[in-house]
Length: 454
Image 1 (tube, rainbow, N blue to C red):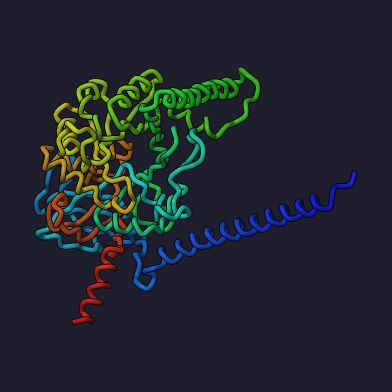
Image 2 (image 1 turned 135 degrees about the vertical axis):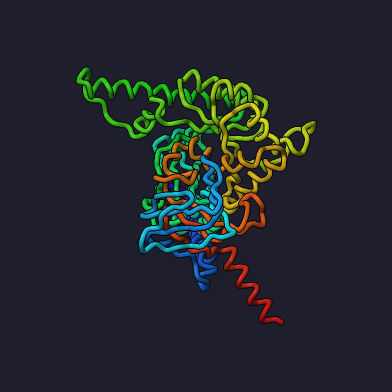
C-alpha cells in the first residue's frame, strides 16, 4: 500500500532536520576538539620565546665538591668535607679525600650538601594542565588496571619537572589513580630527554585506591570487583606455574594477571590510598588476609592507628602534612601533628607532598611544617630522602650520600627545610642540571617589564 504524500513529506522533513542537527553537533564537537588542541599548543608554548631548561648531558669527567658541610643523612654530618663522584656514581666522601686528576673542583666553603628529595606520590609527568583533557593521563578506563605502567605515559618535557628539580626534588613517583587497581608505579628522575632515560626503577609498587565506605552498597560492590581481580590473578598464577612445570595444558597469557604475580609473591608492595579510619582498618585486614605487603598512603586518621601500624610493621606514606581537619571537633593542626605521632609510635614513614604536579616542588614545605608541629628536624629530612627511598625500594640507588650510590644531590646555602634557603646547584646522577625553570623565567620576564617602565 502506498504511503500518503503528506506522511512521506513529514518523514523527509524529519530526516532532514535530524541530518542538520547531526551536522551541527559534529561541527561543534570538532570545534571543541580543535579548541582544546589549540589551547594546549598555546598554553604549553606560551613561553617558547624564553629559554627553556635543557636536559643535562651525562657526566663526562670527575667532579669534587670541597670544603662543604656534607649531610650524608645515614652517617652523620661531615664538616669541611669532600665529595667525589664520577660517571654519575659517588666514589668517595669524607675529610682528606683524594681528588682525582682532571676533576672539576667546586668550592663549597660555607655551603651545605644534601641528597636530593624524593616525592613518593604525585601527578607530575602525567598531567600538565588539568582543564585540558589531552594533557592529562592520570586515569585509565575500567577499575582493574594492574598492567598499566605509569612511566610509559610520563611526559619528559613537562614544565613542572624543571620547577621540581631546581627546588631539589630529584626523584618522583608519578601515580595514576581513579581505579581500584590503578597500575604499576615507577621511580623517575626529574631531568632527562625521554621517559626511558628518566626511569630510575620501574615496578616498585602497585597502586590501589580503597573504595569509599560512605555508601555501603557501593562499597561492597567495589570490594567484590577488587576481590575477584585478586582471586583471578591467583588462579592465573597457579595455572601458569602448572603449565610451565608440564603439569597442565597450555594456558594463555594475560598481561593483567601477569602484572599481579609479583604482588601475590610478596615481591611488589601494594600502595593503598586511604582517607579515613574505616578505610584504614578495612585495608589492613584485607591486606593481611591476602598476604600482601601493604603501604598505607594518606594522612587523615592514620594517627589513630599509629600503635597498630608499628606493631604490624606497616609503613606509611604520609600524603600531605599541610591539611586541615575533616571533623568540626578537631583542631586545625590535626594533619600537621600526624608525623610526630607516627614518629613517637615507631612507625616507618615518609612524607609525600601535594599530589598536584604544579606543587610537587613544595615537598620540603610539608616536611618543615611537620617540624613546626613536633617532628625532629633530622627525621623530617629522612622522611623526604632515605626513608622514602626505603619504602619505595630504591635506597640502594638514592636517598643518602654514600659511596656506590647515584650522585643525586644538591648544594645549598643553608638548611633546605628553611623556605628561604636557596638550592644553588642540583646534580642528578652526576649530571649538572640547568637551574632555570619556569618560575625563574617568569620572574626575569616581569622584572624586565618593570625595569622598562621605570
